[in-house]
Length: 422
Image (cartoon, rainbow, N blue to C red; front, side, top):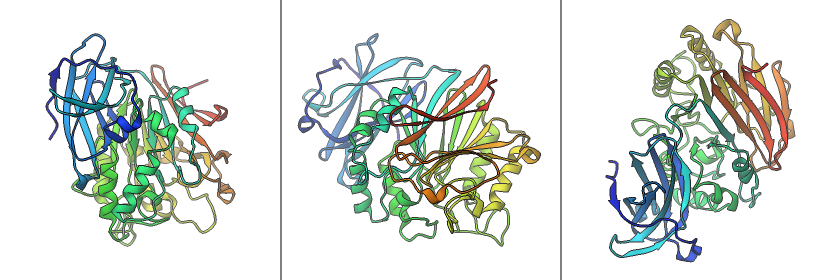
C-alpha cells in the first residue's frame, strides 16, 4: 500500500553531512520517475523509521513520507510520492528520528519530473559492471555529463553468482558503494533487469535452485515500477517521453515449461511473460518501443555459448511475427552480456515490415572478450571497450531515434540513426 503524503513546514537544503552522520548506508536512489510521481530507494543505518522530505522553491512546505526499515528487509526502504507537478524541479533529503524531534539527515538532492507530453528523451543503457575488478567506474559520471535522463541496467550489475540471500545482499551493498554510481543514483532514475550473474550463476536458466531468494533480493534493492507478476519474474516497463522500454526477464522462466510456440521445445519468456508483453505492446502509444533484455538477440558470440535468444529461435520468431501481424512500429532490440558492444541489423522486413536493429551495450566496467567478436551477416559495428555505454536519443516530431556508443572519456565509438535522420 502506498504511503499517504503529509505536509510539514520544514526547510530542505541543509549543508551536506558526513557519512557518519547520515541515517542511511546506501542511496538514496531514484527509481521510477513519471511526470507526477517518483519512487526513491535507500538502505538505513539501523532499524526504525526513516522519512523522506520533498520540496520545491515555489512551495517551501515539505511533503514528508515515512517508511519502516527492518532487518528482515536488510534495512532497505522504498518511498512512493505522488501528486507531483510535471516538468518541475524538486529537492529531497532523508532523515531519521520523529517529526517533532528530527534526527540525522542526508544532504539534499535534486531531480526534475519530466514534462507530461515530453517529445524528446535521452536514455543510457549498459550491462556488466564488476566492482571487484573496477572499484572506480568513471563511466557513470560520463552518463550524467552526457545528459542522460534515466539509466537502464541490463544485468550483471552486480556480479553475484550465488542465490544465497546473505551473499546477494552483500554484493548489492558493495556495488552501490562504487563512488561514481553512488553520486549518480540520487539524481537520475535507475531501472533494471537481471542477467545470469546477478540472477545466480553464469549462463543459467530458470531451473536454478533457490532462485526465489535472488528475486526477493532484487526487489529489495531496486525501485522498479513493478516486479513481474504473481511472484514470478522481474520484468517491467516504463514510459519516458516518446519511448516505452520493456525490460524483459530472460532468466526466471527459461527452460521451466514447454514453449507457448512449440510444446516440444523449451520456453525462454514463459507463457505468463509472453501474454504480458503482447498486451503491453498492443496498448503502447509510444513512438518507439525498446525491447531490452540481459542476453543478446542473435547468436554471433564466443564459441559454444548458447546463452542468447538465437538458442530459442521459435520464440524470437513468434515475437517478430507478432510485431508484423499487429503492425507495431518503431521497435528496437537492446541487449548486453557478451562483453562487447555491437550493432546488428536483422533482415526482418518480410516478417516485421522493417529491419529490426539490435544494439548491444557491454561491458560498462569489466574485461573485454575478444572471442565474442564473431561474424554476423547483419553486423554494422563491433567495439571492444572496457568502460562504455549506449545512449539513445529519441524524438516524436519528427520521429527519430539515434544510438551512440560512448566510452568513459566521452569519445563516440559509433553512431547510428536507427529511425529517421538523413
